[in-house]
Image 1: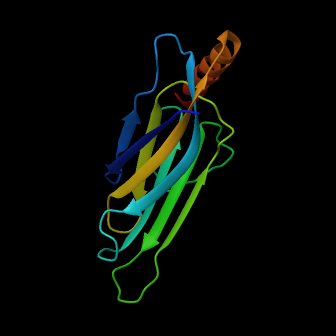
Image 2 (image 1 turned 45 degrees about the vertical axis):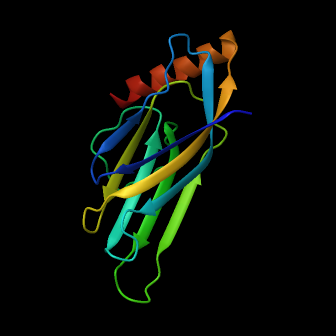
Length: 147
């Protein structure tokens, strides 16, 4: 099993693109780990949501919809700068999805517009021609549905 890891710091209301596509589409991916962490722990009020999608999104927002078949992962962080206060992090990812196109990561902060770190690992999955075609067609159909 081969794993590729990705990490970054995403700014509020922005989208990062992770380039994964290949010319043949014969290499697929499955998410096996996902996590988030604030840029300045214990120093800022923050209520952030990071979402990872298989297709481009519009303006980042705070809505989470697990019925959206293009959603691969969600990370939520809530904390503040008050001494002794708690911070909470929730991460959910769907490890049954195999994809072979780029990923689109969005960030939305409802409190003060803070940035958030993300980290995820993808397992590389070799796709035969049928699996390749199915994964690519699903991604194309999802792109058209979101336009």
